[in-house]
Amino acid sequence: MRTSWSSILLMILPCLFIAPSSTHGRGVFTTQSLAAGVIIEISPVLVLSPSDRLLVDQTLLHDYIFEWGEDRSSAAVALGYLSIYNHACPSNCVYEMDFETGLMRISTVVAIQAGAELSINYHGDFDNDAPLWFSTKIP
Image (cartoon, rainbow, N blue to C red):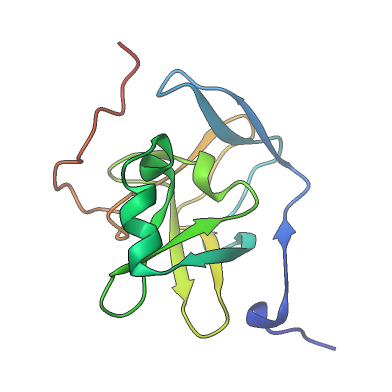
């Protein structure tokens, strides 16, 4: 029986792990090579109201939340490894938001070698080269 990704509560491929990153503190890595188009993580999110988001925006969590909703006025705290993926442009993974089910999915966009760090583009599109609101390099 095939299961829809939107019916899964949490899925992280067992080959993924968190380790120190030369990009920025910690990152998500893989112990196995991955083909392009592989779903590597599906995570539920905790949705924050627009008023709660304003409060969180004043804390360190601001750099770990995702804008949420069609109007992007809410925010989401992603569970699983989602908030640990570092930014790259182009990235080797992409995330997708499902507002209806309260889930986010990460998929590879290129083939990735074992031992490599997995990255997402914080702007949503894997090749969006717009500047970020903070530095992604370790000083």
